[in-house]
Length: 297
Image (tube, rainbow, N blue to C red; front, side):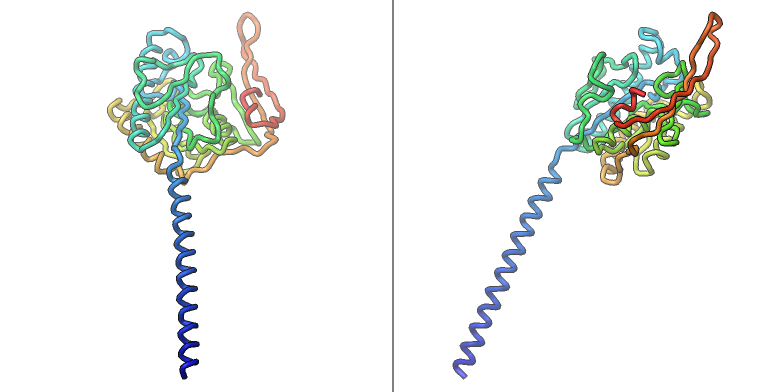
């Protein structure tokens, strides 16, 4: 009996030691996982904003966007800066760590003394590419003040890259505007488009290409190419602020927009010939082997 008790006691001690070992090992694994998760959660949230002028609040005709120094254009730039300020404030209140805002309008549209604090602003030309500094370290892309692709019936100031020759582009058989072009370059780096702002047609186009989780904020409704139903700035800026906060929460649901390469590309555009400047439509087709060369086609 004594030996049997001693044996039982020894087995009990060994079982207790094993339980303590596995419990301790599991606790260590849990602590390591918690530490890893905390480190991942602590990774900085970096947002890249590419702006354009045509999709800003209050902008609805080409006189506001085409000619540098035009009085209407100078005022339109102030409208854009107000939209940017609302988005930057929303991102900061959503605890975004770093914000880079890039002037994507052809003739440039930033007004330095109206820059909202909490972001870095890039403007001026020439510069290295459309989106300088964009890389895989960014968490999300916002297309602010964007516009619909050329040919959109209710798209305010709709065009793709250039409005006068009425450029149109198809990639792998899908007609695409600037929203998709910009998103594809960001997608090359694994950066999803998390928010798009502009008129209702722009927002509709963004949802078509990027899915329902991309936050869209319409700041006007198009009636024709140079006619729109405008919304009061107080309302659009509040919507932009709230949209920016929602976009940060939606980051985990958004996926990068990508194009399969090689890209089968087609471009149509107008050329103007003779003293009468009669227009003639040209078609160009080819293959793009690198998404980063999209704007070279």
